[in-house]
Length: 237
Image 1 (tube, rainbow, N blue to C red):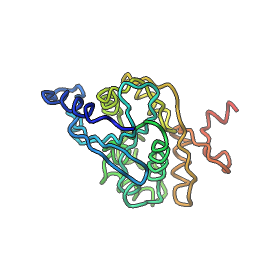
Image 2: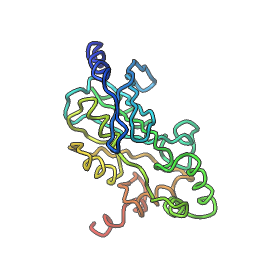
Image 3: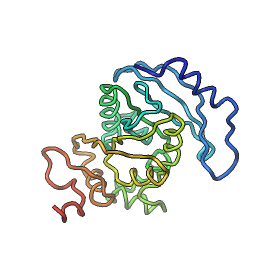
Image 4: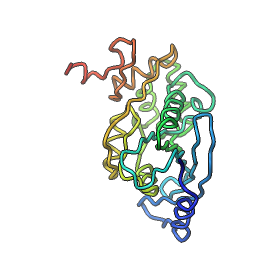
């Protein structure tokens, strides 16, 4: 099951005369859509451009997701070191693979790949943050020392891409409550959350601990102690 050829033509035709004005409002354009057979299953891939960050973002689509409710969606922020180079400092690559494998087994779903490197601070600042982490600071402290918030990402572009693909509501693959709240603030209807739990390694354990304790990520890893359970949840349990 895939987006039919006629549907692809219709989606691209919708954008033929669509120009994004120079304004503060986010405007997203579908640019191209093609087949993407992969080790995770049969997908299609769509490219998008927008006037907000002027970057190209991707939707990796499995099955026919148009006009559907409860579409399984992973919104994944770019991580060159993890996704491409296999860094063990984070769980980004593991989450991406887990999401693609899971969605590849479903009737339909999609992964949005957003160009928001380093939680939105960019590649160079991400490596600067790594330097600070090497000196003993955690990920939150490192970002703050560089003058950033712990997480600078915004999901308005993701919301517009979902609308552009005529997705009515989603089941989101995430451990991050802030991502859910941000998407909802942009009008995305979220009917459920699917945890993306991957085992830690000796290098990313402090990173995951900080995610849970300082950023509220819902990380309850199998065969782990309560290290990864957010403090607010511990208090209520």
